[in-house]
Length: 407
Length: 97
Ligand SMILES: [Zn+2]
Image (cartoon, rainbow over all chains, first blue to last red; front, side, top):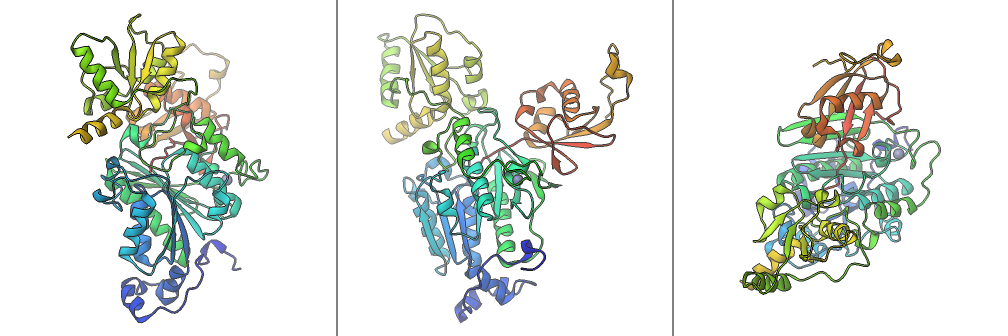
């Protein structure tokens, strides 16, 4: 090993390129420092992309175009219509198809040199080490804290670089975490934020091209690490604000007290990552790597069955006819309520519900949010105070889908 | 901008000592909550600096408990001491993808 192992190419040296490959990759083989050898490294590389979402879409396409020989993609979700504004690897016709299948077909259509491995499952503490250990590096495009800590801890334990990017609204962050060579994710973010304190993209919104910007940065860092060109973004945190179009980098050093890579580590397996999932109110079994999931909610096993969109429509019709009486409470934010609301709903954000909001006594309540996580919290809080509460399963998104299906 | 949190307050024993003047720089959601990019405050620890910043920018209060604080490129606990001229970078975490 050379003295600077983080500058050694990570990719295995693939076979000599064919004439067709020389043509296909000619514009990047021309690049100073990349050359034929760099191309062979890319063709010999194995990269796992976690999540075929907003970040994974551009990253997968660019890594496929560059000729990364083996691309793994792990995602347990199916393509949803709310994904399409930003998850541009999928097509409208893919709605309902597994994201791994849709992403794999796009990758194969772009570059037949690439072998795609579809991991159509959730990344969990039970499978993470087995799955990740087959790859040279991991590109993190997940959308929730439990999966991010799981990827970070698994990469740290395996000594694999963790090419990382994350998004919210108009903001993006990116870095390369690599325990032993620089900081790891836990060096800078040692523990997840309190549940509910940070909105997800489903709650806070996200601009599609910002996904492209950050996902593309991740692809660049992956190519650099695999081929050994340039200076990897190790020990630097990139901070992007698309609303002001600013890009800043902050130096970040490894933390000697880091629980994963510090002098006296306390993390030796994925137990701590499993605890993050519980802390975030999202047991690993529910920790989807998808842009529409809403982390931060608590599950309530004692809760009655949620009501369906059809049942809500029937009760709304009955209420309009004077045969039923209830209060439909939207527990999302005012901004979300302004964008789309169910006619006849009353806005009371979940924070106010949990903060002690008291509806009139004696009238049944139906609560809803975007997809059912916050409304489950609100329903639990109201039931604890003695109210008769039904929860709209799937939230307004499920209701909108049902309206769409009726047309 | 410069403020002295001690100004106009009744002096306790701590205020007899001059506390370091430090910069607190906000990123992402913390910047949106603060409404400014940076504040100059007095604080001898990270906790004191962010307490002074919150006094100036009450909107920060719900955001800060989730944030990481970097000083000189190193994440620091709130108890970490600050020297004159230090800069505290306030980094909210987010996980969207
Ligand atoms: Zn670390």
